[in-house]
Length: 182
Image (cartoon, rainbow, N blue to C red):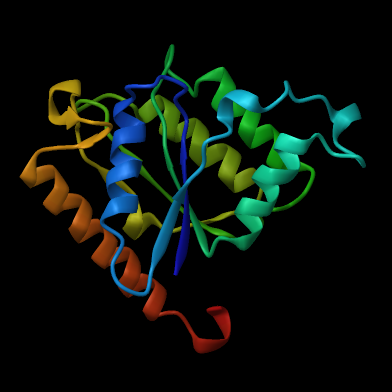
């Protein structure tokens, strides 16, 4: 199983990025995960530019989504919704149908009671593009900056929770019909 991990944050010391880096590092045998690193390089979405030749960063994003078996998001919430740069990334996926029927999930690292405005918007956009939301793989795991070291989650309870999350995702993947897996 190949996961593409996309953080909605452009911040270098992002807890969302740290969670996804940890997910990548904890990939079980037979699985792999790639952290997408091009959020800041995407041009502002303009439907006039969504045709050949597609801007290079957009073509790379779409290719990474196409080659992934599933996509996992982790995003902060700004003013009760998605950050503009992350919404821009999602806008670039609409015209290509690259997320249509693609299994997707998210990890919410916000403090308890936070982040749900962004996730509601994310759910709405993913529904619009016909992504296949794996609710069983969507997770709330509060991760404060004090739990992050060297760009990854440093504390054992949170690392164990992310390892259990991987086990759940792996089981969901293995439970799929054989003709649905690659």
